[in-house]
Length: 219
Image (cartoon, rainbow, N blue to C red; front, top):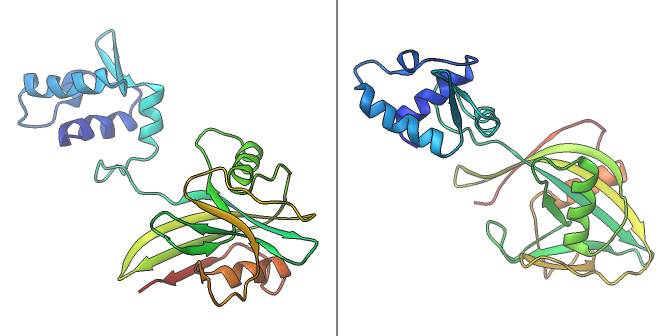
């Protein structure tokens, strides 16, 4: 997105509506700026009524992510559901990833929540996609997890942690990003996702309740 388009969006995040003259940056020809406004109109981010420009619902959605100082979309933590599922044989559901950034790492099953979908629907959908289990798990706690490598943040997630216990059920992943299976947390042949033992400690109550930051480095 061109800087003039970002400038117009930032201005409109701080006003209900503005005229072209009010949006026009200093020392920019109006015909050039009008070209960029037309691009915003075409993409459905702004609308023009009675000579006034304002954000559309699509534009307001984007505005909530814009840094008003830089005009750029601000990276934000992903929201995920993570599932600690055990069976009557004392095993735990695990997921081996076949997608970066955690290729060949094994974690508890988790999935990113979809924008605009309810917590209940997101939880059920992500659990089913990763495990083929169709149940309502019990909420445990929330936490942040930040994972870096060579000083670069490769993921930052807000995690809703859930748990459940089932009979010996055949796990199947409904996604192409990895496979789900029953296992244990002491298998020397597995490369565990950072913080796996800390998450297990939250479930067992060994760590105090309350939201916390988990920070790990893969370097």
